[in-house]
Structure formats: structure tokens, C-alpha cells
Amino acid sequence: MSARLVFNVLAVGGICMFTGIMAHIGFSFGAYWQSMAPAAFLEWFSANAPLVGRTIPLFVIVSFVGLAGSLWYDWNDSWRRGLWLAIYACLVAIFIVTFAWHLPVNSQLLTRTITPDQVPTLLDTWLNLHWLRVAIALLASVLSVIATSRSDKPAPNEDAGDFWR
Image 1: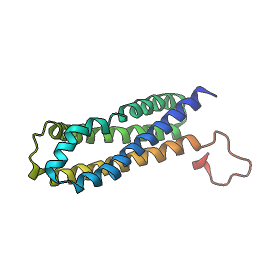
Image 2: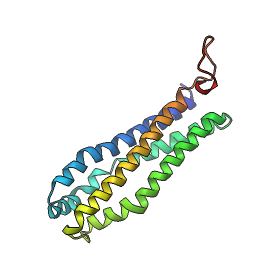
Image 3: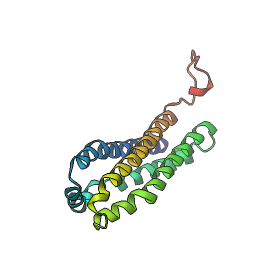
């Protein structure tokens, strides 16, 4: 097994797991949170929110290690380099939304500085922006698979053109 393969597996696996965790939060917790009374949601969130996202940093680290190594190995391949850089751009966009909106709001929810009457609107915005992050992460997942699936050498009868080689 080559180091390049290890980095590719870390990149694809980490990004796809990150995407899956975020989708799980949206599908499972999002619907549950919206079904709760606002005061009950605030109580639940302050007690349990730290448990919900604790695995995300692990997969983010794995993703960045894999991305860094994959980008380094593919730096001289402009097509793959472009894909890896697009994936980095996707992750940066996710982090901008996370640090600009989700973390400050989560902090307010954890400290209960949000009143129950603010919860429905705030939660709707939180979930809409969360789904935006999931969509961007899904795009990064697809791009990572494409970046690793292109063969370095075309098959003898390949007619798909240069794009898939």
C-alpha cells in the first residue's frame, strides 16, 4: 500500500464520514428538536449538545491530513490538484458558516441566553444553514471520489476522453 493511497483513503473516508455525521444530525436531531416545545428544547440542548458534535473534530482532522497528503502527491497533476483545492474550498465554506453562525448560536443555546419565543425562528435558520453545510460537504465527498478514481494511465479502448483519465 502506497502512502498516496493512505492519504486518499483518509481524505475520502474522512470527508464522507464528516458528511454522514452532519446529515445524521440534520435528519435525526433536527426533526426531533423541531418537535419539542421551545423550553424543552433549550433544556435538552444545554444538557446534550456537547455530546452531539464531539466526533466531528476527529473526522475533520482525518480529512485535512488526507487532503494535505493527497494534494502534495497530486500537486503536479493540474486536474487532481484542482479537485483537491475545490474540496479545500468546500471545507473552508463549511467552516465559515460554522464559525460565523452555528458556534455563536450554539453558545447562546448552551448558556440559555435565548428566550423560548426566539427558538422556533432560530432553529429554522440553524437547520437551513446546517443543510447548506451538508450540501457543501456532499459536494466535497463527490469531488474526493472523483479525484481518486481517475486512472493515471488510460485503458487501451477507453473512449471517455481525457476528462476521466
